[in-house]
Image (cartoon, rainbow, N blue to C red):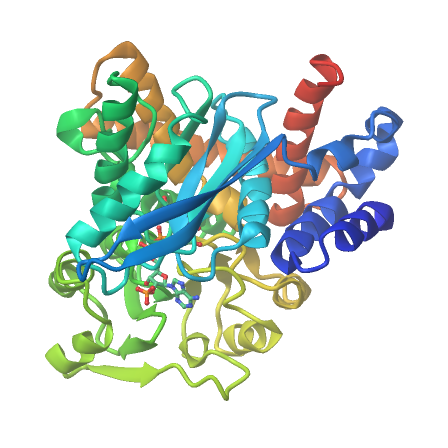
Length: 449
Ligand code: NDP
């Protein structure tokens, strides 16, 4: 196990997030490797950490002043053992190869857990959509797709959204793909409803995360009703996490963006959430404005001198980190425990650092790792692909009930795999083991390719 980490650290020393993701999975699957020598003989760990293909490309575009801008585009086609590559596109200035490799690696196991036939991939750009006009975003997306289109397709690689890529960006990307290929196919998911999208796709990651949380709480005969919840982020995942929590009778007291967070002691109700949606999705404003509108809320700006995030230091029962990776360190985790939190459910990918996870496990917190808890998004993307292939649209109720069933199944799969390998109640181990076994058995069946 140490060997494979040494290999990737020697080979790509700067890819810290990728090392972290590989380390977490390899630690969990050690008993599986020990009990099944065939996996090591077939060099499965070495094969898993090397993407099947990495595509990097130049993305030139012109801004509204007529200046030429150049960004870098990526697509990591990580593993196609159980289906076409599938995973989101992220547009954010922090994007680099290491971050996308970590996300693609996680996606492989997450997709395996969904019960749907999808391999793993991820892509994006260091382009920052913040502060750009719609026309600038459109020109960027068109340039990005003018290279990506030759590498993707409904049976090859099907990208979706992620940070910085929502309905607007998917629309521009799809328009260019269609023009270049001269075909209308389900090559992207998260499409608009009137041109091939699925009902519930925008809601799916957030709703799915709350369904997973409800399953975890049920193992202790608890429900979300009346629970006080901390949520980070105010984008797609956070908004629909809050929506479902309100519906189930929980009280959500925080939301954030990369500049700071609001704490609303009286709870974010449906009307206030509508305001957040308008603020973030239409006006593309900052969460600070929430506290200017609602006097029950206090805004705290990010203070980079602090070695903890004060958002996680409030009395609560449950926490839903739904912004980005590594947003909970060991100090934040200890604050959550000290404030009475009994469950942490990850809407974001890898939001908790390894030391934070250690704190949760030490205190027997119900900890739902992102690759299980946020798998609802890619699951409904899979359902969107199915509907596109069948050329029909399921109702909202139909998709939502399938999503619920998938989240319930993922929860049970994690519970069973953890028990089978002597780690009862450890959802992280269960998710990693179940995803790993499914993918690597398919790799073995398909020979050395
Ligand atoms: P959005 O772009 O819609 O929202 C992201 C939110 O997180 C924004 O509030 C953003 O603030 C905040 N944020 C982003 N980067 C940082 C940072 N470095 N520090 C603090 N806050 C930050 O993205 P999503 O909601 O789609 O994604 C959120 C998380 O969920 C990501 O980890 C993503 O990988 C994961 N995820 C998303 C899925 C989906 O279906 N969309 C599926 C599964 C996982 P600001 O506006 O200031 O940038």
